[in-house]
Length: 338
Image 1 (cartoon, rainbow, N blue to C red):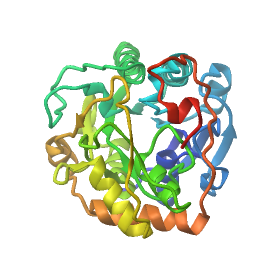
Image 2: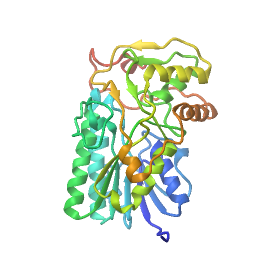
Image 3: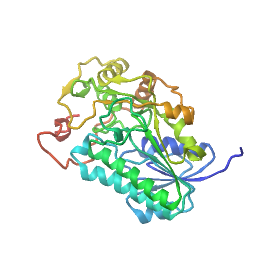
């Protein structure tokens, strides 16, 4: 099958996932136009040879204008602060739900052929693990609610206007370019950044929460075929490993071994509405996308460590205000203790 060059609009191109995706698409020969508000990314993440616009995804008129002529949209941008959403629900909902509605509406207006939306495994809530795509969404916090609501708007608009859609559900992606000075999310990067400054890792609760982590390259191996693979229309697909579930305590141990900082974790009280066990099945991704885990958890964390070490540690950037400050708010956030 001969290569067909496409014009692709990518949101969040200064961020972790969006920058890697845009770079991969350009290297494959596609034309990429991207947007980012720089809230969750770094300027040097933006790939060369793309058309970059600094702006907010909520700016419908701007998005519509720069999306003109696009064949496909990848909506990667998100304020993916699940825990923080309990205490800053307005900002998180605005940046996720309203931004998604603006992106999807502009895409319909511009008559794109397909929209790929990067949702979150937060959609599954606290259901029995491993999560499968057939499960009915059961969000338990404002962030998860915003992602599920965005999914519903996507399906509604696309089905009405005969536009193809795919919902990707990545889980806990790690690797270079992740924002490691964000105090609210990215547990691996937070731990490494703290430990490299001689500080003990912070763990909420007993640390027995289980997660699965996906290295960025393995995630991209599924996202790229979503561009035009015909049998993916109207599919929801989990992306990430299901062979290696791990506790947060184990993550701290791995980071300690890498950094050489042997300090006992600081345990804080549980975060409200945190899902204790969040792991997904990759069976559907294996079936439809030939998904394989090529980078192990330890290797993925090691590559993340190398990236942070090369760039140097950073003070944590509390760039989102706490909207609800009460006895439930983690002291690490209200007092800027991270």
